[in-house]
Image (cartoon, rainbow over all chains, first blue to last red; front, side):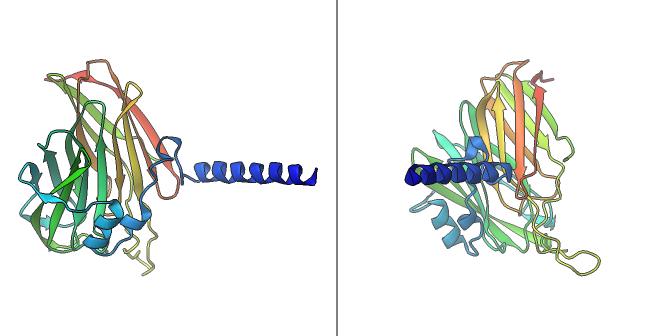
Length: 155
Length: 106
């Protein structure tokens, strides 16, 4: 009797915690299964960041195009265009090697989305921008150096 | 409540060209205010775009994305009149969704 009551209470508490997490924005229903990868985003070097994202044995590829300025006058806003010409590309990840936290993001493409993305980023000091494209579970990578005259982190 | 996004979605052939501007400070947690105090981390973490209710593009990003973020992406097989909605959510749980209708390109 008591046992039953306790498990009911436990269950209610768990549900409540989940609802609180959803309300607090820790989990959005659509992304509940693929939560924001805190470990990867907090990694301080690119090797750890890549490992946390699950990238290993990335093969160098010329089929990934990175369009970014060679010299960015303002590191606070550096425009980057990335296109993967690798058939079946489902995601593109970006790492700015010399930023305090190199992992900048992952973009996933499905249902007709073309493996292309434009974004604008902060680059603290001159750094290679490394891109990893994933297609059929395999990883491909290339990098482009961006020189920065005024850093984009801090104030 | 966050400011509305500016979304432009135009059709070029059968590919929708989507461009979005989000109003967000994207604080890195490293910047100091006028009083010399660190401004806490405040940044968009996730973005989801849906075409007629189907998820086509998602992004998980860090505070290294510039203030008032701009993103562009392309979706093949879209038609004029299709509904495109974009949602972002930040590290404080704040979120915003805006929707536009895909227009014919010039």
